[in-house]
Length: 338
Figure 1 (spheres, rainbow, N blue to C red):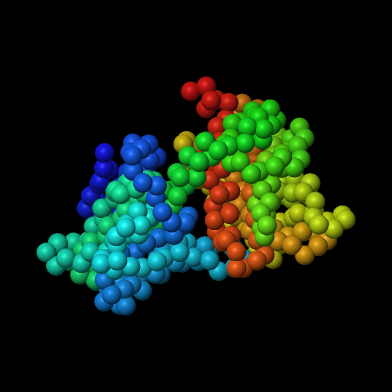
Figure 2 (cartoon, rainbow, N blue to C red):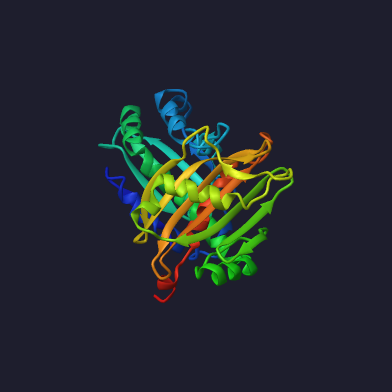
């Protein structure tokens, strides 16, 4: 079954529509596997538009720098092709953006399709009467178009985590914190105690890890930026650095970004910034998510970090996104009963 939705002007509807993406991934088992790497985007665009203001706008939106990385990396790796070249394996890519200029159209709009020629696949078709209308549409709806593409990538990860997971680490999290989580294979349990767990994934040229910790909730002040940074430093100090006496801490060179948001009705606090090693020369980006476990009246935090000093290897962006996606697999006791 082909999922297709036309959005007439109100791109906000993309968010609601995109929530069914995971379901689409399960419906067409006979289709080819989608091609391409995570956060790679094929843009099908005529040469004239690509070399003009419309092409500039597309690049400005989809290759904008990922925030809070200690090197410049784009939100998506954009590969542009013409309609003539859009065939075979290219048409089976995981993320596709088609640009259509048609003077017979009254206004710019976007079509969203899932699993058109392969799965899991998302295809956005941005169409309008002229370049000016499409440029304006991109400017007004930038965040929501990015949201739909990023959610498609997240859904792929979450589905993979459910199938290729690490039962040992998941059981340890459940025992210590009472929460369920899906942890992908490759992670190794590095340390655990009654209020702390650390798991890491070591690559030849990079390191990716997360640690979970909990402590008593003492009121709204427990969720302030200052309180969260203080708690982070307390628990991060349990992660040793490469030299004797060294340990992880939050970098004070840049104040972490702080925001609150709701996910499925639960309030979360996000910290996003950089970590250092006290007593050594290491560092990288981190992101943490904190909420209150009302069953135990404890503050619960999952904190992920990346160390990837080789600029020529896979992007930090992909590592940190993998950490972020763990959040969407967490369920607390009251949610497990539902």
